[in-house]
Image (cartoon, rainbow, N blue to C red; front, side):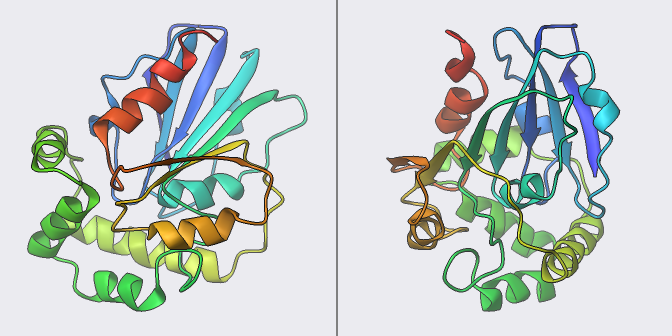
Length: 221
């Protein structure tokens, strides 16, 4: 995976953000969590993680979105790393699953039919409103469709060969208008846990929701 600092100012805490499939840093450059540096992970054509980037921080807080929720569960943090809050947003530990994630037929259809046109349709489905989609277009990732298709195929391969993870989340945000990870599937994925669940009317990508989990949430930290 790619790991890139958006903020690197030797702050006491690090916010480690696992973005979704097809992303890069561009949609998230404006966020400035208080007292935190910000490190984004994206491009899951490999799941290799450089843990040395976490050294020196008093605490690592984790936010993961969409496919990044599963990717985060595959990360095993060294004992010398202090992990704080762990927050999942519109994703589950079962990314390709008819009951608890993206239904396999939809996932495979997206993979098989991915091109410039269908990518734009996918991005539009991520957004509830035209205003959110217009904003996303202004900050959209700068990656090729061919690269994204490989990433989508590799995620499927990695997931099918992965083992159940013991990663425990603290809070989950579920958008009832999510058209990528169906809200009912998300609810089923988390229903037998003691995790605090926040329900809202957001879509899969929602600028206001990201402002909350990547910015406002840390003001009084």
